[in-house]
Length: 130
Image (cartoon, rainbow, N blue to C red; front, side):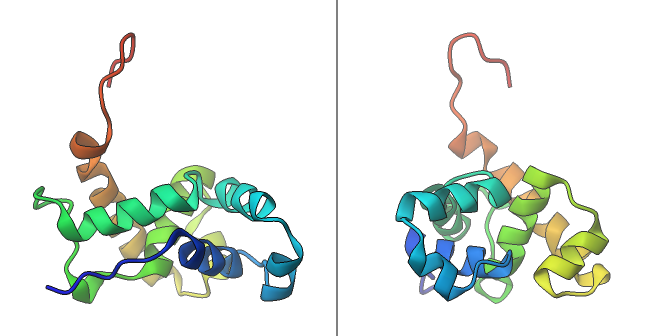
């Protein structure tokens, strides 16, 4: 299977477009500002999101693996946005320009995939209980 590898810049550019930062606004801003904007909408930094995207395709955890036909950056970022901001499906529908039924389907699809990666991505730190 050919991997769909995305750079953090590509991912950030699209993610910011979908939450209202057009090309002009992104180009006028410093990179650090765009990263801050991105994290305010999605939680993790673009670099981390790019790694999760790659992990969906390379993980040995069957529940976390995403088939190429189901890879969709907009739906992945929509799910992260929901996990971070907890917008209603109606709000997600408006922000990401999809109907509520599609929003609900793909939000939960990617939330389950992210959750399944927990064992691979989250390490136990002293004093932390997961």
